[in-house]
Length: 279
Ligand SMILES: C[S@@+](CC[C@H](N)C(=O)[O-])C[C@H]1O[C@@H](n2cnc3c(N)ncnc32)[C@H](O)[C@@H]1O
Image (cartoon, rainbow, N blue to C red; front, side, top):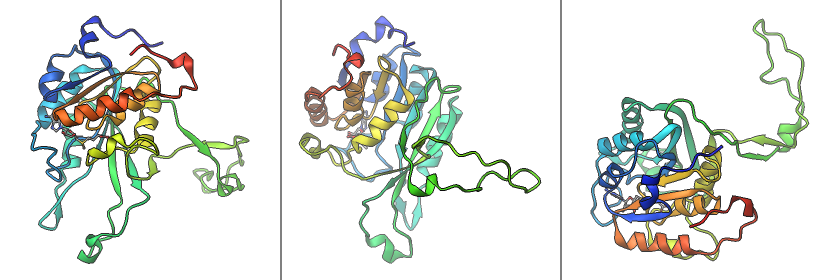
């Protein structure tokens, strides 16, 4: 069951705070957040108005505000500088481990609609994915697996994976289910929003809504508190609201805070009224 958020979190709940994330996080109570789904500026690939941020401070504060069993989904990639990837993404994952979190899973977002770029001419294969590091404070307290329909190949009888230690095939077990749990490589198109949601197009790096929604649905339950400390256009906050979670957004650029407000204010066709929350 989901415990009520502490009273000291009330000034932040279901709001987008315009400010520096490290300073804002420092004012939030410890162990008050169930899930963080976020994406920081990648190296200096985009400037977002020239604002800076402090990885060590953000990692320390996120670790502090996370509840035991809480999860951080950190979506990130590297710049290529002088022909070499910077390795910043991996350094950040290791930095979170140094701050006391576990690296629960290294998930991959495959961008299925990437178009060929100049990189291919520079003796590389096309870059078509990003890291989704799943970090947790101890064992994750929630994991609601996302399922997808089985394909023809899934339903074919196969011995693959059923070999015993001596090399012989074990007894064949075939599930009668027509769906299966997703693997940790998620194939999702880039581009934010969906038809009819033009409000997010003023931000240069919007999450796909499905990516945010599937992580919110997996790692939290209705009523839980979901935080995005690099809120951008508010994709995570919108997903949290639509799935009946409470949310906290932090964004330093006032123009992007406006986009968040517009997107969160959009009416949601709610097929699951039992998940409703007051906002
Ligand atoms: C990659 S974008 C996030 C996009 C977001 N996931 C979305 O779907 O729209 C990173 C955001 O972090 C914000 N940002 C940069 N430094 C910040 C800081 N110190 N505090 C809060 N936000 C910051 C930028 O303005 C930018 O909007």
